[in-house]
Structures are given as C-alpha cells and as structure tokens.
Image (cartoon, rainbow, N blue to C red; front, side):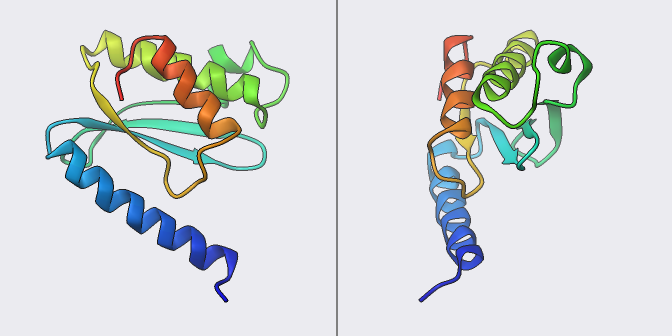
Length: 120
C-alpha cells in the first residue's frame, strides 16, 4: 500500500509526462500549487522561466476575498492569471495541476481561467 505522499508523487510524475507529450515544447504551462490557506498559479514558459504569477496573497485579490483557502479565492486567482496571460498575448496553455486531483479549488481555478480567455 502506498502512502498519500507517494501517491501524490506518482500522480505528479505521470501528469508531467502527459503534459510534455501534449505541449510539444510550444505552449506555456499554468502551474497550480495549493495549501490549506492559499492557492498559487504561475505561468511558465517552455524553458521553465516564470512569466507571471497570481496568488491569494496578491493585494488586488486579497481585497476581494475573505479567506484564501476556498473556491471563491481560487476563482479570483484563475481570473487574474488569465488576464495576465492575455495581456502578455498568451492564449494557448497547458494546465499543470501538479499532482492534485481535479476537483474543488483546482477545478474552480481552471474553469475560471477558461471563462476569462485561456485555452487548455
């Protein structure tokens, strides 16, 4: 039986492999990290350089939300990262959920980013 951390690492490795096949080195990645209190999103180019970032710690997002560890906060971060990407003329990206299951806050962030103009 595998521990939760081992399962997380296996999902992360499997998903990163699939993303490398899909992106073909041409698309930027939206990388998501979550903690109990906050959620973070980074826009990373094909060389691994962070182009932009958004999180619940940003001042403009912090003013909109009460707490950073809920679905409403994730939607605000998704909207923010999509607006930043569009301002940098980036529309087509791949969504790197970093081994997290696609539900709850991760899904809310992805859906919000899609609604505000990102294609993945």
